[in-house]
Image 1 (spheres, rainbow, N blue to C red):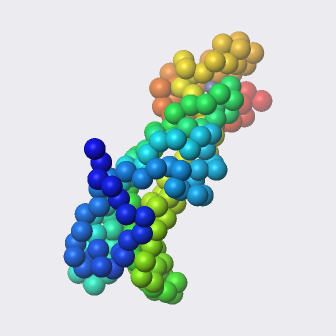
Image 2 (tube, protein in one colour; image 1 turned 120 degrees about the vertical axis):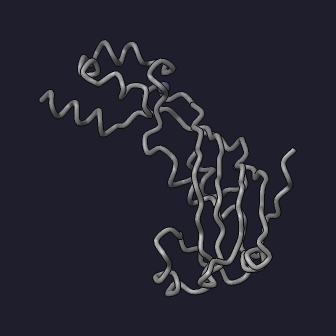
Image 3 (cartoon, rainbow, N blue to C red; image 1 turned 135 degrees about the vertical axis):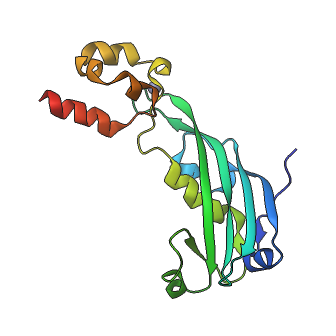
Length: 177
Ligand SMILES: [Zn+2]
């Protein structure tokens, strides 16, 4: 069983005491992420290491992974999208402090207490595919799509196994023109 994580944390205290937070949060609790999905079931697994670096900057680094439900933009059915993303946050009290941070940190502005889901929610949102699509062999409209658009034959086989890239499809269409 995963460790039960607190709803709210005190990032500066956790950093000073070099705490590690490992566990799961329900997707439901992420109020900005949940409406972007086709369902709010599932959990977000978090592994965050808090600390203070040599410049005295309080930070949290680690990984977040989850599997969310989105709607395939080709067949409009639901699909599972797995998200694995890294988190590297620096805690600052004022917005102007955020400008001087080393580039490997994302600023997180917090006075004292923060919602734990807020810490990782933005990273997950950024990692969501802009145009979620099934793998070609799992999409129910694949055959129809292929037979009606011969351009797909021009897509390199290597491209088909990668995460679908809508820009690659556009590029193919442009060449065909
Ligand atoms: Zn599909």
